[in-house]
Image 1 (tube, rainbow, N blue to C red):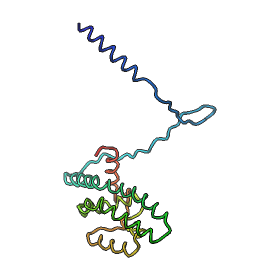
Image 2 (tube, rainbow, N blue to C red; image 1 turned 90 degrees about the horizontal axis):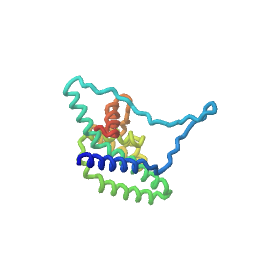
Image 3 (tube, rainbow, N blue to C red; image 1 turned 90 degrees about the vertical axis):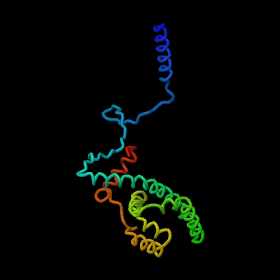
Image 4 (cartoon, rainbow, N blue to C red; image 1 turned 45 degrees about the vertical axis):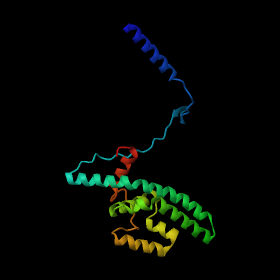
Length: 195
């Protein structure tokens, strides 16, 4: 009896494995010609390598993980900001009429405050500082430049003053090589799904 059960299981698994081998599409590989030969060629994405973080003390390790949790919390907002900025900027620049631009800007601002205002108000000062840097990373423009381009110099000056009251700076730029190296490492780990 055991032999029959084993035989049935083998038949079932081998037939299901055979059906799993059906090709559903053709994949072509690009190549390069060299000395009359065609050599397959694939562009691989650069993978940054970070040295394994060894902490000198428990205090530094806790500081790193606190930073990681803050970056993980605000990074999605920075990515959304970059996407929305590209969308809004295209629509904003498409119109030559100043009145239409101003109304569109008010609508977009109201929509963003309705959508994200309550969540962003709950951010701590240090999370806000990280968000300002990440917005610069994602949009390639400081928050001050974005406000100045869209709302004007007076608005940018006003919001810079408010930010300075809370110890932030809207003109702060993201520096992945020196000052913000740890944040860049954390972002890489977030995108890789490690954190």
